[in-house]
Picture: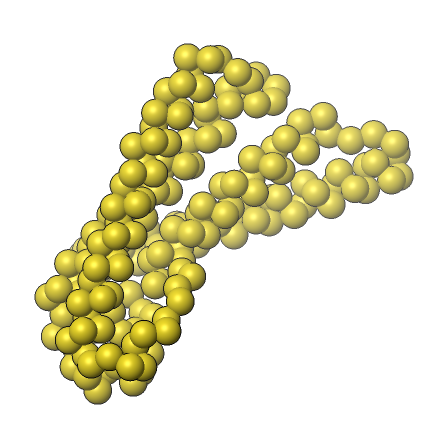
Amino acid sequence: MHFILSRQVPSVSNFHDSIAGRLLRRVHWFEDSLLALMLLTMILLAVAQIFLRNIFDTGIIWGDPLIRVMVIWVALAGAMVAGRNNAHISIDIISPWVNFKTLKLLRSVSTLFTAIVCGIMVYHSIDFILLEVEDGSMAFSSIPIWVCELIIPIAFTVLTLRFIICFMLILTSSATSSDLSKE
């Protein structure tokens, strides 16, 4: 498993052919499809709003609030996909100057810290959702605002689990220093 050193999802021999591998590929396909569908819907709705306003001096009443909600959903779904592909934002200024064991230690600490921060976000986002449920505010139409915010704990739960798995893969990785040059 060379997860810490590559931008690819970790692979185990025969994993991709197993039932779990096929299921994981389907989950990834679903995530990618949902993200693409949300982005396409958001763009089409924005174009429709512009067209309706400029041509007919009207618009979809709930269009703008829905677009704002979809921006959050697309951003957090994109974060989940980026976390899955190990393509999230990172600043790598240390790796050229440290040996492989130190780099592995630093990456494991960094990944564990990221998992902890995401876990804290899960806790606080659930608390936030519960406060919104109590408040009973509406986002648009008759949709409660807490429904629109459900992506926050969902996304951070997925990210937490992915970073915990990454942390465990880093610790158990059999990567060598020659793999380091591939990154």
